[in-house]
Image (tube, rainbow, N blue to C red; front, side):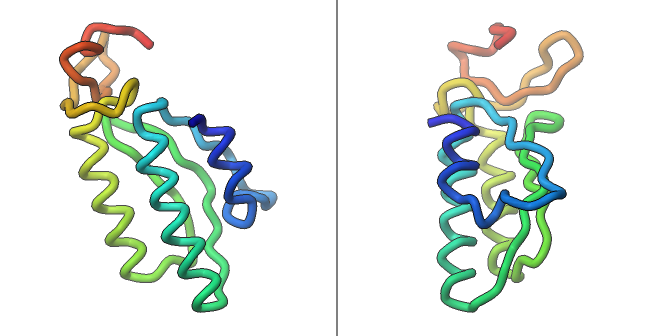
Length: 116
């Protein structure tokens, strides 16, 4: 699964003029997809429209910038952000935040020295 796959699978979240990008490693794609699926399901049920502007790593954790979310969805995003700091961006295995040449990223033991 890739970032492009997520954008194409959830066009109602990303297809607008203010969208910047989804730029996460393969290891975090499942976290992002789960957030998008929950928001999409709730949008249909509650007949609302959430707009996602950007999804990216920052300081070794996921950042999910959007508008129009409920408190429940904010909690889902917060949980995913917390999990991302313990999930390798490369492979999705259990890991932690490491510093690679001044850049903070979440990596498992296998990938903690990779510059991917």
